[in-house]
Length: 136
Image (cartoon, rainbow, N blue to C red; front, side, top):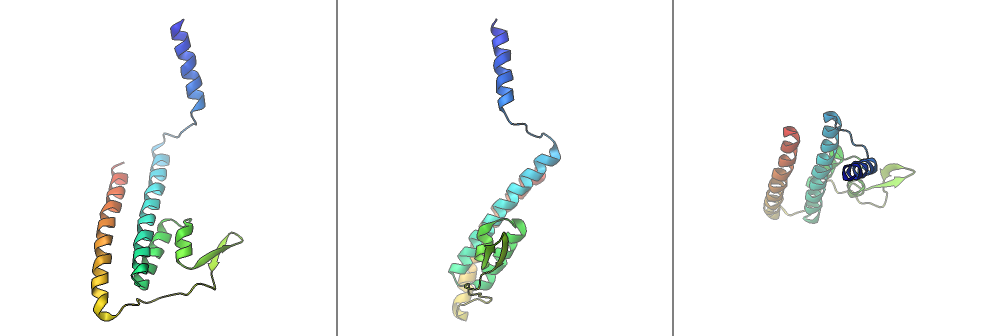
């Protein structure tokens, strides 16, 4: 009698689990999308740091790189001065666009050094994520 109950319990449990694809291509696509989202988030963090240090050209570069990796990320669109209107991202006329760095020449090298150190640390983590994906 007990084996019958075990089989019934397993059947009920199997029916409640959503079907997952075990196709390697599907798993790779999911892992790639997750890795790209994490990499985009890292670029956004770097961009916000650069923006806080008034390295606006560097920040824009980071935000555009994040946009390439995760085009659906609302944070990166907002950081680039876009607003959503009728489902489309359009330039926000209230946003002031800074295209160049706003630091005195004697300070820029120190601030760029801090940015590069943060980018190196972030780059190692991102490279590790992509390396895991490649191993898969």
